[in-house]
Amino acid sequence: GESVGLHLPTLSVQEGDNSIINCAYSNSASDYFIWYKQESGKGPQFIIDIRSNMDKRQGQRVTVLLNKTVKHLSLQIAATQPGDSAVYFCAENRVQGAQKLVFGQGTRLTINP
Amino acid sequence: DAGVTQSPTHLIKTRGQHVTLRCSPISGHKSVSWYQQVLGQGPQFIFQYYEKEERGRGNFPDRFSARQFPNYSSELNVNALLLGDSALYLCASSRHGEELFFGSGTQLSVL
Image (cartoon, rainbow over all chains, first blue to last red; front, side, top):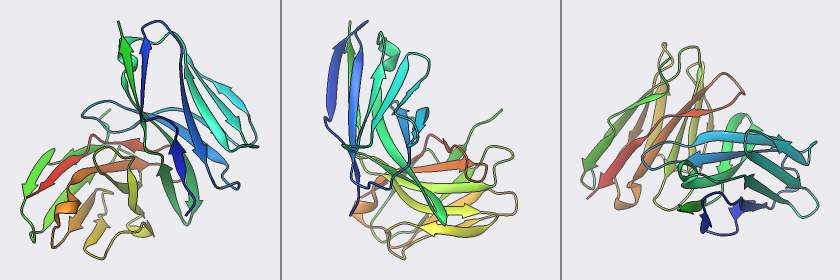
C-alpha cells in the first residue's frame, strides 16, 4: 500500500551543527505533511507542516522542504541543542471521511556535546 | 489549560483479558482519535470519533472498539488481548479538521 517512510532510523550530530532528517512518500496525490517530535515518555508534538502548494516553509530554527517531483521531504534543524534529542516523524495528513495521520517509522536524533 | 489527558499511564494485563483506556480531550475539542504505537515504529491510526460518531477506522480487528461520550471524552476497549497488543496507545484531540494534539499515552503490556 501507499506509505510514508524515513531514510535513516538514527542520526547523531554535534551540538550546534545543523541536522537534516529525510522522509519519502509514495502517493503522488498526498498534499499535506506534518513533522512531529516525540520525546521519551510523551506523545508526538507538532513541529511544522507543509502543503503541496509550497516547496519550503520555515519556523523557529526549523525548515521543511518538499520536493513533489521525487516525493521527498526533509526537516532541517538549525544549531541543534540537547533539547532537540528525540524521535522525529514525518506524517501525511489524509482526510477521507476521517482525519487520519499516516506516520513514517521515525528517526532518532541524538545530540553529542 | 490542560492538554489531552489519558489514564491509566501504565497497565499490565494477561492474554485473553479485556482492557479499557480513557481519554479526556482539550476543552473545546470535539474530535478524538486513537493511535497504536508499537515500540520502534510510528503511531498507527485506530479510530476517529467526532460528535460521538465514528468517522473512521484503521486496519484493526473487531476486538478493538471505542466510543465517545457527550462530554467528548472517549474510551478505547480491547477484548481478548494478545501479546501483540502490547504498545503505547495514544489519544489525540482536535477541533474538527484542525491540528491534532496528542496525550502522553497509555503503555499497555500484555503478558
